[in-house]
Amino acid sequence: MRKIWENHPWMIDEQRYRRFNQKYTMFSRTGWDQKIQEIARKTVGSVLRNINSARKSSLLDYALKSAGWWVSMKASPHQMDRGDGGLVSWNSDISPVFSIASSPWNENPQLEEERRKFKQAVEKKPEIMSEIVKRASHFLGADLVGIAQFDERWVYSHRIMNPRYHPGKEFSEESLDLPEGIRYCIVLVFEEDYDMYSTADGGVAMADVGFGYSRMAITAGSVAEFLRALGFTAIPSGNDLAISIPYAISAGLGEYSRMGLLITRKFGPRIRIAKVFTDAPLAADKPIRFGVYEFCTKCKKCAEKCPSQSIPYGEPEWEGKTISNASGVYKWYVDVEKCFEYWCTSGSLGCGVCVRVCPYNKPTHKPSYPIHALFRDYISRIVGGNIGKIIDDMLGYGRRKKPSEWWGVDYDRLVGVS
Ligand code: SF4
Ligand code: SF4
Image (cartoon, rainbow, N blue to C red; front, side):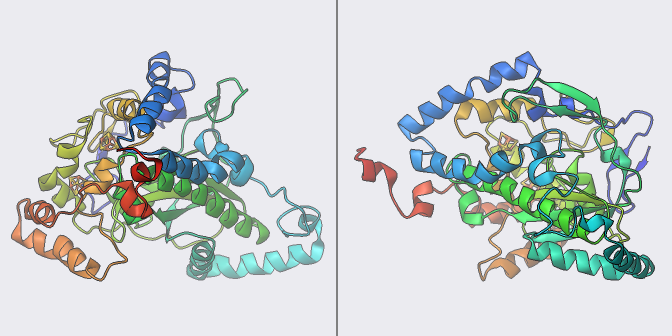
């Protein structure tokens, strides 16, 4: 047993831990596991009940959710299962008029010579290559970017094809090996909108989740194309190929939390993560600590507010609660089966209450943000106890807003519901 990151509390039992088979992730089980398929089938009825009674979400909210997912599911369902297709293709297959990453450019000796010179230069100065990649990634849509050393432990042992994301295909599974020579993982973080997330569960938060996936595919695919045009191997990835959170922690983008998500310093847990694996020479970032473990130990607000009671109240453990948890790591495990069942039966098609109520989720666009950050990161740790959570509650943070507050339109009044 040893620590995964020097200055973090999380440990791995190398005798016990095995590379996780993607087949066992909660979303993948919708493709083969009858128990989960039965739960997933409840979704349609719960959505209709939700729309018809406008409990949490109206027709407007579901329409925006559909739009949010459009790019991801139309151009890149592969990022939900086996990867290597659509926007997350492993190779450039667009017209050479628009990209120098594909044939016949790749056979051009002058271009090859220029790429050779560039590679030679950045091999000696990987920190400059990191700056270049980060600048390009921000331009292409990422809100935060970090570089992690490649660590095969977090790559799925097998990848799957899921008919849920690829209608008409059969469920299948194959062993997964990334191309030889991968050295780094570029981790891309996307902020989700604070005001939209305030309407979770349901509401317009689910639209922002969908649009987060669309942005992941656009940016990860584009960053990969940038690197391929420079002559490197680059493999874009969303939920496919590997577990994202350990890479994000290695890349210095945040800490692991009680609710099982990454907490970033700037946006808290209100984020999505995508990745690009590459053989380009880069300078890896270092993991950071800003007190999330200590805060989570006392706070437990997500566990209290979770409508399905899926988040643990106790100490971290070695054993996951379901086959969808990657056991053998000392951490907090969420009961993802219970969480998923809530998604499918509440009509919210996702939930996000834990993200909404977390004291790390604060509106970075408002002038009060620096005061919150100062209090949370420094003063509450000095004062001790769960004072941070108590004050958060007193100030009314984390309360649910109605989607009509975001729209500026009262749907019920508009359609004549009394
Ligand atoms: S709500 Fe509290 S316990 Fe839960 S993840 Fe956030 S800080 Fe940690
Ligand atoms: S998404 Fe909702 S149901 Fe799932 S763990 Fe978070 S609060 Fe609980």
